[in-house]
Length: 248
Ligand code: 4GX
Image (cartoon, rainbow, N blue to C red; front, side, top):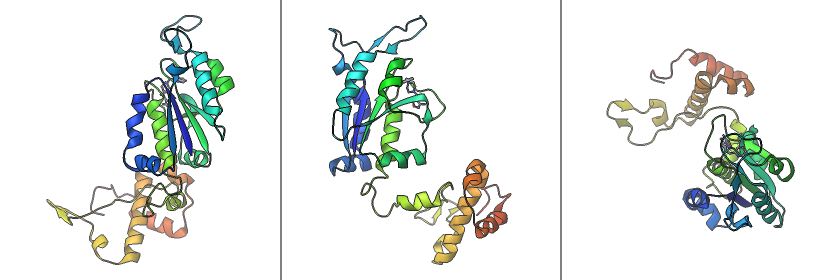
């Protein structure tokens, strides 16, 4: 997959893409990330990318010409890109949207700054608009990295075979169970006995129950969407009312 990131702060997005799993995915050619500096597409002497809003008011707006030239450059590649603007007005990003984007061969992520971009860019040169959540950031660079991270890990070969994403989409809509590793006692905090038992069926049951309890306690909205089996309902009934702090 080709991913273009259009930004006036290329250094802000470069290094996260060099580290860890994303860095490996780039090295191995599973994703090709091109960071394009929108300023390079400005044609005036000062390479201006922003200007004052028509109608007055505070702040600046990103100019249409440099953005459209940068988008045209990205689209000119083969295969043509799906162009996505990151903004609080976009459709909410989610695991489902990440799966949808992971099926594309070429994404172009447009990072706005200031009060936003000239509305004509959004209306005529962008295919999709995505928000990573209901809070206000200083620019679209961090949202673009969030999207790249969430999408890249779904591509074949990006994760090791131990971390399966198919399992995730199957377990859909439940929170993860708690994880432990050595030592089995730290200060006076014990790892739940059942995890040391070697009884794989009991471990599976306990983990499922923990997932159900956590989701019930922290994200009841997710539980409404999950399709629970009769067995799940029994497991949940056993633990409803637990505060999650007492010993499991
Ligand atoms: N999820 N921001 C974008 C400037 C802007 C505004 C409108 C284009 C159109 C954000 C978010 C986010 C702040 C990034 C405003 N650009 N983006 N920026 N939350 O808060 O995606």
